Amino acid sequence: DTDLVLFDESLVLLAKKETYRGREYFEKQAVVAESGISRYEALDSVANRFPADQDIRRLFARALDDSFSSIREFALANLLALADSMPLTAAEEEKIVAMAKKDPDNAVRAGAIDLLNKTGPDKYADLFMEFIGDSSYYVAGAALNAYLENRDNPERDAVAEGLMDTDNIQVVVPLAEYFIQLGDTARADWFHEKISRLNGESLYYFLGYYGDYFARFEALDHEPALRKLFQLAENHPAGYVRLAAFQALMGFIDEEGVPEKARELNAAEKDETVKKYQQFFLGTDGDMN
Image (cartoon, rainbow, N blue to C red; front, side):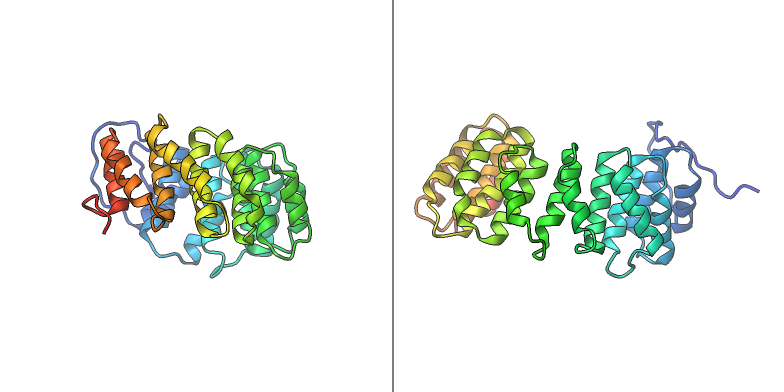
């Protein structure tokens, strides 16, 4: 007998398909489909369409052994989301440790570290410290984030100091979060240095932390940060960077001159998409009310 027939499981046909497929269909597809894309689609559908229960959780646990790395990464993320209500078994935890150490995909290793951090931040502190020195920035960044998050780890300051010259965003973001959470107002020069050295998507991701750091602490000199944000919001060639800088400025919107300058930036913006988002941040009509 045929339990399940998958049509175009590799998703290569161009015709639009409108069909109703229930939970049982997706659960079977996640197991029997030969195409990794089809298995991923099934797991994604299960995760987003149906409330999680033990059967769905077992499906994600099974997916940890999938040959498709994106599926392993997706399974780890979903087990992380369910960890409070459905904790890992001892056997699963052992498997996650092995994945963190040896999975061939570094993004999967990073996902495994995130899950171990949720499961046992104290238990795996030494392992995280070891992974901070990994050659993969994905792995090192996940381990650094896990180690710095735990206030009981005694070497947090020393670890952070040792990595301050690194410009890889996977490491820079955990450091920025750590300095902000500590309320460490002695790191202004580090934030200024990073905003000048990063570019592209890394600059985009860092801008929110840069703005948050200076806007959060009144004791800091805001003028250099505001000048940098205004400069990027006005002149950077990438629209997504200009928009991120503009959004970061909203943290200073109560400061003298910022609302007026923000309106000027919006009036001068040539990219209509960026302009509309700027107006959203300012207020739907583009005015400060």
